Image 1: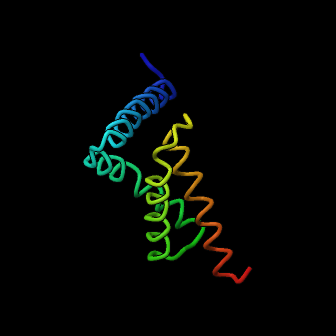
Image 2: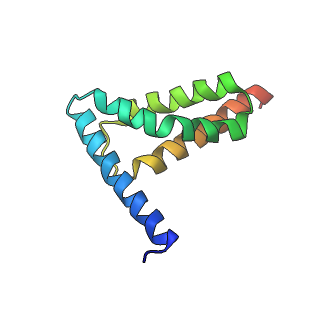
Image 3: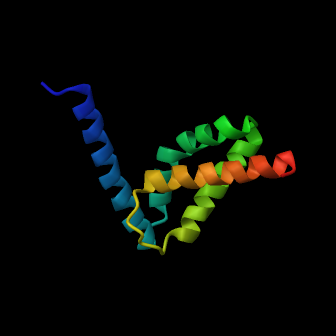
Length: 104
């Protein structure tokens, strides 16, 4: 019998492998792979943006900006997990947007 922690760790590992495969396909020119990544991460990225910005339209715009930054970053093979990179980037972009909106 497996514990909930073991199942969660296995799910993260499987998703990481799936992410790596989709990124590899995207680098090879298979744009349908972007759909898979977007459907997997758009809502969680939006939710993180929402926690900072509390505005729906702005949070969606930062979500799209995060994916645009990912595409610009795509040639880089830094080795970081995609999920980590997306969440760090959306947090940074959300903080910048919040600062811009507050006049800092």
